[in-house]
Length: 489
Image 1 (cartoon, helix red, strand yellow):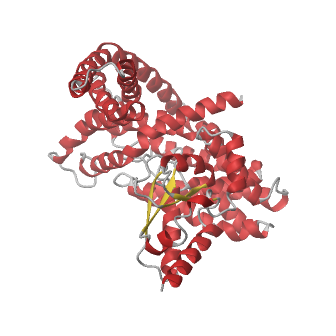
Image 2 (tube, one colour):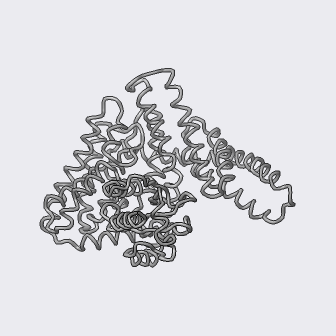
Image 3 (cartoon, one colour):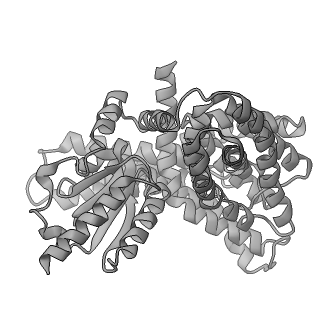
């Protein structure tokens, strides 16, 4: 069972890595549809002509490009884009996002295998010729494969999926999806479902009716909001009670749902609350035929409202309110009368281990990282020539898995602490742990990403944390920088 979960997590991580870098394009297309289609906020027949081509061509090609790059580097990216065109044109009336997710990585794998096969066999002076023509010729072949083989296969799969979804919608069974989605979120299995199925199917809905209920399933912040509210109101544990308001703000307004997971893991019965809240919201959404015009990413109440189609803003907001209220009502007796199965700190560590597993790290590696997190630097020998670098440093990079959610939040917290200490000339950037800038001197990341960070930025001093909001390492780093600069005066 654990092996199966690991495989699903790896699959979801792979799909997420293709979709997440391109979410901005999805949002741009969704907002364009919400504004300029016939029933939009600002109907415009001329600008509406861009909506269809963006969905049919731009989004699949971006995904194919990203998928190819993940497997085969820059050459794989070009191959992925070429091959995706073949898939698109094989079914021009269908949205080939899933086809791009299959064809892009496959094309990247082909060029990767070719490069490995000819490595060391190319005569000096012919490298550019072989590199360029290999991409051109193999790209042509993969485009034909996409057009003749992969396209029809993916078209058939989409027809089956759409038929299954239609049955769920027609029989009012869509709320039952929450039974699987809410536990999957806590287990970090949601990416395989959300990005692998909901996003492509949602895009098809938006193309047809200008909105999609699939964008409202996993991203609704209401279920977690209700749980955090209940902790704030009724928790007998002082730590969880006082930390819940801050977590609530980050969860509801910032859209970073994983901050609520330790609170749920403290008392697993709270899954009933999140499932109940999600089901209530989905029932409401189904009855009133609600949907979003674009993905709500991150799952913030602001993103929810902004993505609402014309005339649905209040109804969409009520979906969050309903989920929060139902979740709060169910969570209240659980928190008031049931004893917690674990402490918040233990639940946080459990969440960290589960997150590490979802990213392909072993539990042993996670535990080793956890053991090292008390040290400000994972490698004291790389503490940048005593205080010299701390005196002159003008940038700190905060890294997380995708480089968008957790790292952006952590970077903002650290930047605020630096400014409060009177240090105005240091900028804190955020980035993916896989794409840390080459000139980075000081890197901050979660303890579970320490090994990846060290591999990605071997030249940098790495500071590991266990809590994105209230990490004591923030204060230690700020104090260290301040002392180093004072000594230099």
